[in-house]
Length: 552
Image 1 (cartoon, rainbow, N blue to C red):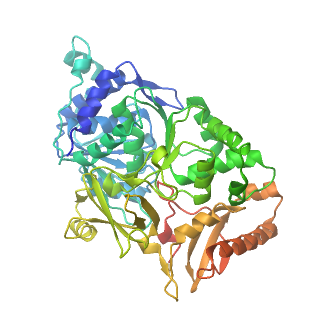
Image 2 (image 1 turned 180 degrees about the vertical axis):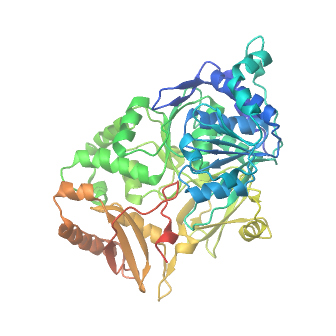
Image 3 (image 1 turned 45 degrees about the vertical axis):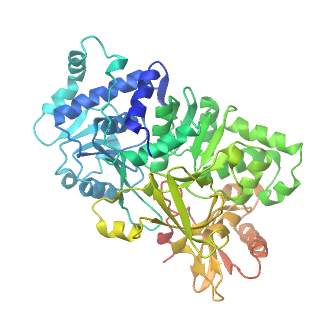
């Protein structure tokens, strides 16, 4: 049973931490304390009053991560309306469709994004505001809101004649069952659905992270994930703000070089990221510096000794800024060889599992309780089971229910009914195993698994994970092609150059990789060939490959 409300948790944090930094923009160095953040929220609440915004109205936010993105979202949910965060990486058609489908009344947008929004999409939008300075850039009826925003400081001083005090930070707690946000997914299947998440869903996740002491007053975080995605929104924004942490917004997923520079400048205590970023950082900042030429990580781990381990740990810790306490990896399983490497050097990391429909957490364990090869234990207020005759040994679909689980898909009763069974279990579409200790292990997606002629079940993601740490491989996708199991590989041309390899050399290297891969897989599963793919695969915001674009 929930004891709190995430809106009241934010209120308490803003009051308690008034003098502490809350948000910093890495590129502009603009800083908002918890006090100035609350001030800006109060100004937007006055604007919402002027707009006649109601509790069941929806307010969309689309743009790159910046402090005003955060302020706009906080203002919407603390006002009691429903936020509709839209991923900055969505194409123009998706953005316009979401604005119409969600029946958006107000829109906050980055100035560049305003150029791609069609007039027809804003037919029911009352007003549009810029995420660069909150100025009104469009209103449907007259100029009243434009004038109100121009004179917002006078209105603010009139509302608070004695000054804005900590006691003025007072938000009404919305009902637990009320819709707090509609989060549109952009998954590997290509279908975008509006996930209706309640105040209770978000509260449960924020409470859980606070109970695990992931964040606290003064804890520094470097935000890498898009705030339009539920992983970034809850783990990189809501939970840190509820704890009094200091968030530095990077704004976009950077190159490894820029990321290392930012990490060393911010010196974060906590970083939330996806496996691809963690894997690239480990390879580029540690392995390439410890060894001349190319090296297979899989061959390094067994030979590490007490002299190598501290040196590797020191290199990676330095890359993260030197004061790291936790890297939380989510969005997909971590490569097993990278995981073994991190465990050997005693690096502070853990792997969590979740989905948008669970706001997002399903499983998590702190580093000291992390079980290798897993993605943690089922979180509190949630229950899970695996649809399998032997859930601990034979993979089956993961089913969940509890406080984290969504109300359903917005304006989509058919998909909602398909996702839940008669007993209220949500079908995740992921395959895995669950042992008696509630430790969850992910194998892959149910829809991507391949059944071989002899009945052997293959999960392509597991083969890709093995391939992705081999020499010359940047990323891979395994699928049935012309009746044979085939690996499509995007070469790591930077590494190939370092190794002095041209295209013929890359092809020969891939033949060696294929032989090593099949030897590791065993006789039951064999990949017929590796085909080179010319460019990186298109991905979702959490860096998962949009498989449907390539497997047809």
